[in-house]
Amino acid sequence: MIFLHLLTVQNGGIKRSSLEVLSRGRELVASMREHGGGNGAELHAVVCSPEVADWDAAKWSAEIGPYCVNTVWMATDEAFKEHNNQALLSAVQAAHAQATGNGTKASVVAMASTEGVKDILGALSVRLGASVIADVSEFEVSTEGDRVQLSATRPVMASKAQTKVQASALHVMVSMRSGSYGILESAGSHENSTIS
Image (cartoon, rainbow, N blue to C red; front, side):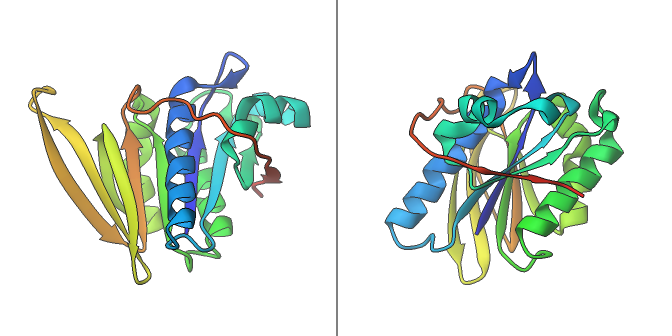
């Protein structure tokens, strides 16, 4: 299973809300491997920003090294200098296709619940053929055969109540509220790949 996380760059570094999502992905991958359900589980990240084009190995290590990301997919052209829905959709779709072997491996696509993500979430789920649960405060992932079972809690009624929701598909997507999880600290390394 591939866990693909969209990371946002702001002020020369990965945004904290993105690192929270990455932390949760790392916890889920580690848990799946520990309990035998995660053979082949990998943590991937996609970053769409010209700012990262000049990052060296030391900068990448400082930003995401502790999260043990297997592969970072980068799209660094100038189209990403400003928010660009079409370019972002195409880049995430390309990274997903490469990471999942053109959709043959099960996947979880996770991202921080931001205004930019809300702009692309529906269109991206259609492009990936994914079930989606938006704006969650916590989530769990398990596998059932070749499908991913996503169970989440999301606030409703102006955050006065919580509801449990589920989705099951080969590909699932989730957007997570900021502050839902902390930042994970552990040693690790990653490999950079440029999205073509």
